Length: 283
Image (cartoon, rainbow, N blue to C red):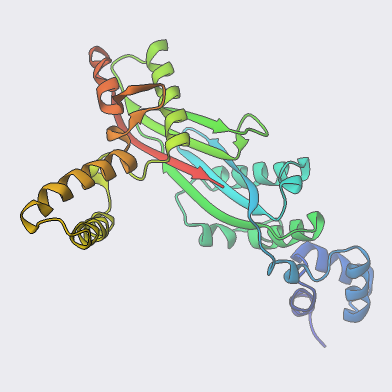
């Protein structure tokens, strides 16, 4: 005769329902698998696994922080209607709280394996898939260790004061975090959300990305019939334009189209203002 752990495992495999839902159903049906499956189906909790095959392109992103870490988390749903619901938003907040309680830097795969109630975080996802009736995916999890720096963030299309469609997080240093510095940092966060840079500066950009772009641009120049003696000069100009599009410090500031971000920052030299890093998480 199978013990309760084995029965729960079998029921979960057959229904895709969460650990707690399976345990409760077995208890209510005298450990009878078939009756438990029927009961879960009647409650709409069975076959959550089939929903996991469906596309999930909507959802929301949230930001959470304690004294040690700052967390950016992205969960996808199938519809925007579900993403705006309190059930989904509370679920996202609960996930953020779980990361904060764990209080360490982990990958999303490790997070899903963490214990939650009598199961795992993945079981919690399965339970919410059944409850909401849509596929839910932990798409991204960024955890940053809080340093002796200053931070600012911006939320675009917000659903709550910490949840929206896009979140940008900026880390910076200054000798005095006055209101004009806080305003600058907030505006830079808005810029990041709008322009979506890939790195802080050219030196931070992935060398593979640079090499790939150089190869593409060089082939385009050669195929256009330009003389070989000016190819390198043209390529230099093409790459300068590329860097101005993908690196934050070399982008044109959205609030002042005549100036680059790095030039705007120079205006605040008396505050020793310096950008350290940024994160961007978006649907």
